[in-house]
Image 1 (cartoon, one colour):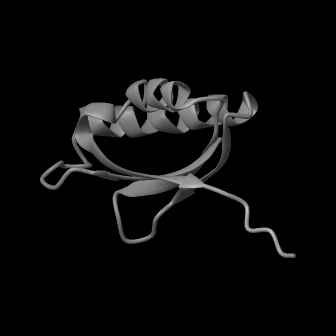
Image 2 (cartoon, helix red, strand yellow):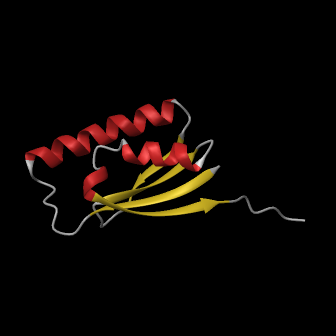
Length: 90
């Protein structure tokens, strides 16, 4: 199952705080780990926002929930999640 996950840091979060800088660094490592496990197909920074877009390929909704819960910025982010389906032509 593929999902588009758009995430953005909540309003009022100061990205320059030392704790947040560490979380964002940890997030990059976490994304690379998921990519190596083939659970994260693509991950992008959304220009002009403090957030990103991830395309996850997981076995279940529960697996996606676990992935998001383990994100280092989980408690500071807002998410939009969209299931994806291939467009087939006839």
